[in-house]
Image (cartoon, rainbow, N blue to C red; front, side, top):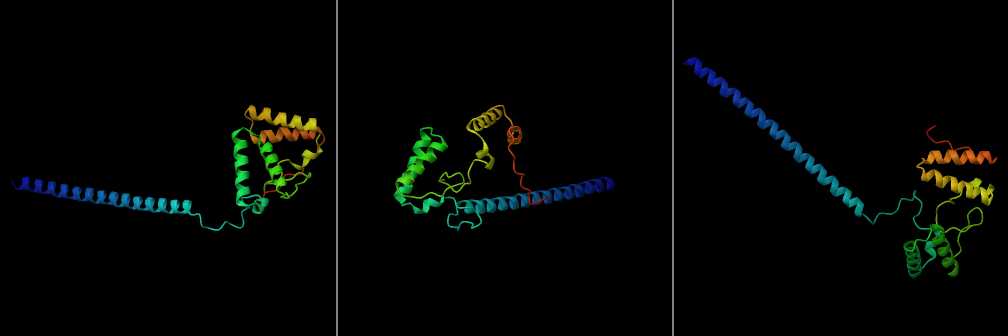
Length: 186
Protein backbone atom coordinates (compact mmCIF):
# COMPACT_ATOMS: atom_id res chain seq x y z
CA UNK A 1 0.00 0.00 0.00
CA UNK A 2 2.94 2.33 0.61
CA UNK A 3 3.99 1.88 -3.00
CA UNK A 4 0.58 2.88 -4.21
CA UNK A 5 0.62 6.12 -2.21
CA UNK A 6 4.06 7.00 -3.47
CA UNK A 7 2.92 6.50 -7.06
CA UNK A 8 -0.22 8.60 -6.50
CA UNK A 9 1.85 11.25 -4.73
CA UNK A 10 4.38 11.32 -7.59
CA UNK A 11 1.55 11.56 -10.09
CA UNK A 12 0.01 14.49 -8.19
CA UNK A 13 3.38 16.27 -8.05
CA UNK A 14 3.83 15.75 -11.79
CA UNK A 15 0.29 17.10 -12.45
CA UNK A 16 0.94 20.16 -10.24
CA UNK A 17 4.22 20.85 -12.07
CA UNK A 18 2.50 20.49 -15.43
CA UNK A 19 -0.39 22.77 -14.36
CA UNK A 20 2.09 25.38 -13.09
CA UNK A 21 4.03 25.21 -16.37
CA UNK A 22 0.81 25.57 -18.38
CA UNK A 23 -0.33 28.53 -16.25
CA UNK A 24 3.07 30.19 -16.72
CA UNK A 25 2.84 29.66 -20.52
CA UNK A 26 -0.67 31.11 -20.56
CA UNK A 27 0.55 34.11 -18.59
CA UNK A 28 3.41 34.71 -21.06
CA UNK A 29 1.01 34.48 -23.99
CA UNK A 30 -1.47 36.85 -22.34
CA UNK A 31 1.24 39.39 -21.48
CA UNK A 32 2.62 39.17 -25.02
CA UNK A 33 -0.82 39.72 -26.55
CA UNK A 34 -1.46 42.68 -24.27
CA UNK A 35 1.90 44.20 -25.18
CA UNK A 36 1.19 43.79 -28.89
CA UNK A 37 -2.25 45.36 -28.45
CA UNK A 38 -0.74 48.37 -26.67
CA UNK A 39 1.92 48.77 -29.37
CA UNK A 40 -0.63 48.52 -32.18
CA UNK A 41 -3.01 50.94 -30.50
CA UNK A 42 -0.30 53.52 -29.87
CA UNK A 43 1.16 53.23 -33.37
CA UNK A 44 -2.26 53.61 -35.02
CA UNK A 45 -2.96 56.65 -32.83
CA UNK A 46 0.36 58.19 -33.82
CA UNK A 47 -0.17 57.43 -37.50
CA UNK A 48 -3.68 58.90 -37.51
CA UNK A 49 -2.40 62.02 -35.71
CA UNK A 50 0.33 62.42 -38.32
CA UNK A 51 -2.15 61.92 -41.15
CA UNK A 52 -4.53 64.51 -39.71
CA UNK A 53 -1.79 67.06 -38.98
CA UNK A 54 -2.49 69.97 -41.28
CA UNK A 55 -0.61 72.64 -39.34
CA UNK A 56 2.95 71.71 -40.11
CA UNK A 57 4.99 73.96 -42.34
CA UNK A 58 5.90 72.48 -45.71
CA UNK A 59 9.38 71.06 -46.11
CA UNK A 60 11.51 73.77 -47.78
CA UNK A 61 13.42 71.04 -49.64
CA UNK A 62 10.29 69.98 -51.54
CA UNK A 63 9.10 71.90 -54.59
CA UNK A 64 6.00 74.04 -54.08
CA UNK A 65 2.70 72.38 -54.86
CA UNK A 66 1.13 75.34 -56.63
CA UNK A 67 2.42 76.82 -59.87
CA UNK A 68 4.26 80.14 -59.42
CA UNK A 69 1.43 82.21 -60.88
CA UNK A 70 -1.08 80.91 -58.31
CA UNK A 71 0.11 83.43 -55.70
CA UNK A 72 -0.95 86.25 -58.08
CA UNK A 73 -4.59 85.16 -58.11
CA UNK A 74 -7.42 86.24 -55.84
CA UNK A 75 -9.48 83.57 -54.09
CA UNK A 76 -12.26 84.16 -56.64
CA UNK A 77 -9.85 83.69 -59.56
CA UNK A 78 -8.44 80.50 -58.00
CA UNK A 79 -11.99 79.17 -57.66
CA UNK A 80 -12.69 80.04 -61.32
CA UNK A 81 -9.54 78.19 -62.45
CA UNK A 82 -10.44 75.14 -60.36
CA UNK A 83 -13.99 75.16 -61.74
CA UNK A 84 -12.67 75.52 -65.31
CA UNK A 85 -10.23 72.62 -64.88
CA UNK A 86 -12.84 70.37 -63.26
CA UNK A 87 -15.49 71.06 -65.90
CA UNK A 88 -12.99 70.38 -68.68
CA UNK A 89 -11.87 67.13 -67.01
CA UNK A 90 -15.50 66.09 -66.65
CA UNK A 91 -16.10 66.74 -70.34
CA UNK A 92 -13.08 64.62 -71.31
CA UNK A 93 -10.67 67.37 -72.35
CA UNK A 94 -7.02 66.44 -72.82
CA UNK A 95 -4.38 67.82 -70.44
CA UNK A 96 -3.10 70.04 -73.28
CA UNK A 97 -6.58 71.46 -73.90
CA UNK A 98 -7.00 72.14 -70.19
CA UNK A 99 -3.57 73.79 -70.01
CA UNK A 100 -4.35 75.95 -73.04
CA UNK A 101 -7.68 77.05 -71.51
CA UNK A 102 -6.00 77.89 -68.19
CA UNK A 103 -3.26 79.83 -70.01
CA UNK A 104 -5.90 81.78 -71.97
CA UNK A 105 -7.78 82.63 -68.76
CA UNK A 106 -4.56 83.75 -67.05
CA UNK A 107 -3.61 85.91 -69.99
CA UNK A 108 -7.11 87.38 -69.95
CA UNK A 109 -6.44 88.45 -66.36
CA UNK A 110 -3.01 89.87 -67.30
CA UNK A 111 -0.98 87.16 -65.54
CA UNK A 112 2.44 86.71 -67.15
CA UNK A 113 3.47 83.06 -67.38
CA UNK A 114 7.12 82.03 -67.22
CA UNK A 115 8.42 80.67 -70.51
CA UNK A 116 10.06 77.31 -71.01
CA UNK A 117 12.63 76.45 -73.61
CA UNK A 118 10.95 76.63 -76.97
CA UNK A 119 9.03 79.81 -76.05
CA UNK A 120 5.98 77.96 -74.73
CA UNK A 121 4.39 79.39 -71.56
CA UNK A 122 3.89 77.02 -68.68
CA UNK A 123 1.16 76.95 -66.09
CA UNK A 124 2.92 74.60 -63.71
CA UNK A 125 6.13 74.11 -61.79
CA UNK A 126 6.92 70.90 -63.69
CA UNK A 127 9.75 70.85 -66.20
CA UNK A 128 8.81 70.66 -69.88
CA UNK A 129 7.56 67.25 -70.97
CA UNK A 130 9.47 67.22 -74.25
CA UNK A 131 13.05 65.94 -74.07
CA UNK A 132 15.75 68.21 -75.51
CA UNK A 133 16.15 66.15 -78.70
CA UNK A 134 12.48 66.64 -79.61
CA UNK A 135 13.23 70.08 -81.13
CA UNK A 136 15.52 68.36 -83.68
CA UNK A 137 12.67 66.28 -85.13
CA UNK A 138 10.34 67.10 -87.97
CA UNK A 139 6.59 66.94 -87.39
CA UNK A 140 6.53 63.62 -89.29
CA UNK A 141 9.28 62.18 -87.07
CA UNK A 142 7.46 63.38 -83.93
CA UNK A 143 4.32 61.62 -85.17
CA UNK A 144 6.30 58.43 -85.84
CA UNK A 145 7.80 58.53 -82.33
CA UNK A 146 4.37 59.07 -80.81
CA UNK A 147 2.92 56.19 -82.84
CA UNK A 148 5.83 53.95 -81.82
CA UNK A 149 5.32 54.76 -78.13
CA UNK A 150 1.56 54.17 -78.32
CA UNK A 151 1.91 50.85 -80.12
CA UNK A 152 4.55 49.63 -77.65
CA UNK A 153 2.40 50.65 -74.68
CA UNK A 154 -0.60 48.87 -76.22
CA UNK A 155 1.48 45.71 -76.59
CA UNK A 156 2.50 45.85 -72.92
CA UNK A 157 6.12 46.94 -73.36
CA UNK A 158 7.98 48.12 -70.27
CA UNK A 159 9.16 51.74 -70.00
CA UNK A 160 12.74 50.49 -70.49
CA UNK A 161 11.76 48.68 -73.71
CA UNK A 162 9.94 51.77 -74.97
CA UNK A 163 12.94 53.99 -74.22
CA UNK A 164 15.28 51.56 -76.01
CA UNK A 165 13.02 51.50 -79.09
CA UNK A 166 12.76 55.31 -79.18
CA UNK A 167 16.53 55.65 -78.77
CA UNK A 168 17.11 53.17 -81.60
CA UNK A 169 14.75 55.14 -83.88
CA UNK A 170 16.50 58.41 -82.98
CA UNK A 171 19.92 56.92 -83.71
CA UNK A 172 18.56 55.63 -87.01
CA UNK A 173 17.70 59.26 -87.87
CA UNK A 174 21.15 60.47 -86.75
CA UNK A 175 19.96 62.23 -83.59
CA UNK A 176 22.70 62.39 -80.96
CA UNK A 177 21.37 61.52 -77.52
CA UNK A 178 22.91 63.00 -74.39
CA UNK A 179 24.65 60.52 -72.10
CA UNK A 180 22.40 59.29 -69.29
CA UNK A 181 23.17 60.99 -65.96
CA UNK A 182 25.36 59.07 -63.56
CA UNK A 183 23.63 58.12 -60.35
CA UNK A 184 25.21 59.42 -57.14
CA UNK A 185 25.65 55.83 -55.90
CA UNK A 186 28.28 55.02 -58.55
